[in-house]
Length: 134
Figure: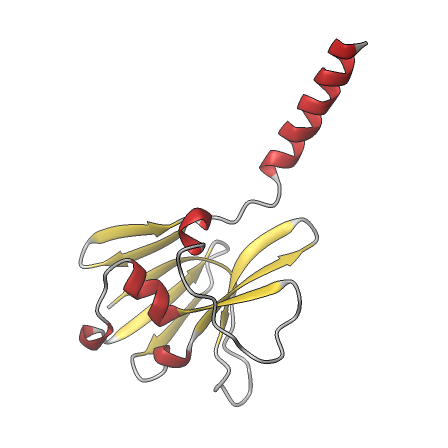
């Protein structure tokens, strides 16, 4: 009986292990690729944005770049790329006020581009998994 209980527990853990995984964020700059893992996120300050939902956590793009030792004063633009192929280019003037939200919906955890200063709130992408720095 103990073996069956242990086996059932192990199967449950394995089934849950694959879900709810936040993908690594890949950052490409000067032909060098850096990754930010969910463990790394614990070392990066959370940005206190008003009106966030309880399932959202905000990270400043500036803080993410600082974490991987990229100096923002030499950048021209940042391209945000999602796992489903969508792309959004942000100019250097805007990226200081640009955030990646970690969101959770229906057993899915992902990054979402968020630009609070965007007057129409039309520039957002779900499932961001890559930043290309130009």
